[in-house]
Amino acid sequence: MAIFLNENSKVIVQGMTGSEGMKHTPRMLRAGTTVVGGVNPRKAGQKVDFDGSSLPVFGTVADAMAETGADTTVIFVPPAFAKSAMLEAIDAGIGLAVVITEGIPVHDSATAWAHAVATGNKTRVIGPNCPGIASPGKSNAGIIPADITGPGSIGLVSKSGTLTYQMMYELRDIGFSTAVGIGGDPVIGTTHIDALQAFEDDPETSAIVMIGEIGGDAEERAAAYIKEHITKPVVGYVAGFTAPEGKTMGHAGAIVSGSSGTAQAKKDALEAAGVTVGKTPSETARLLRDRVK
Image 1 (cartoon, rainbow, N blue to C red):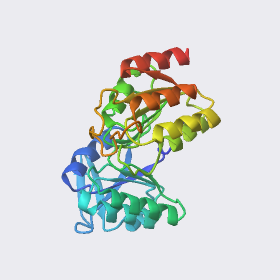
Image 2: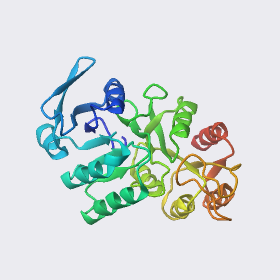
Image 3: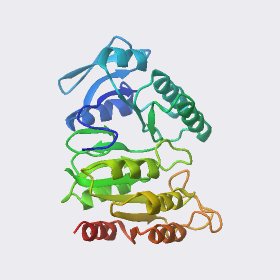
């Protein structure tokens, strides 16, 4: 099985006719994703050809859902328009919104997340500033390369895009049920905890890799959740052991203030919850193999 995204998912792309949408839509199609159309109110009624697939462009998410039965949207629109795109998807009641866009103001993300909650959490938001979600051999929504691994029994949840790719490659001999890049911004939709519980409930996921990074307390909260609710083996990696205090490292949320949010504090919390934590991505992959054996 897979979590959140599977072979039956019907995907639309908000921003399909933009530069990023034009680049990544054919990659998703080649990965086996059922992309059924795009959304651009200025180009509604047009069609776009991708490697022999002619995809319609709709004026709104609601129109796309009504015409195609879409249940997933991937959002590639620029940061200035991302809040409107997210709110439109949430108002339409689409089941999954994968927000790839980087640089969205935190207030905009918070507004969209609050709106999703206020409307009954009908829409699961992944991101923003994330690589998306991939269920190898079934579907791929976002920018995760489709050729670095295959289907298998590992579940992966990660703040970092590039570390997602590396871990998928490191464990390509085992393969993945689903890899979820949740993003590293201070405000995100789907959290480590959400993905951990979904993997716990998935009968075809046998072990979980969790990748975190400095800043905030998401990993500490995940550790407490793992201790109480997760029975499957969990292996972790925390990026940022050498990050200087007070300096933002890559992601907008990756900043350490005093003793809060340090890699060591996160490692200690995870190990106290029974999570084996690697010092490098490669060591983390080896530890996962040991746990599976």
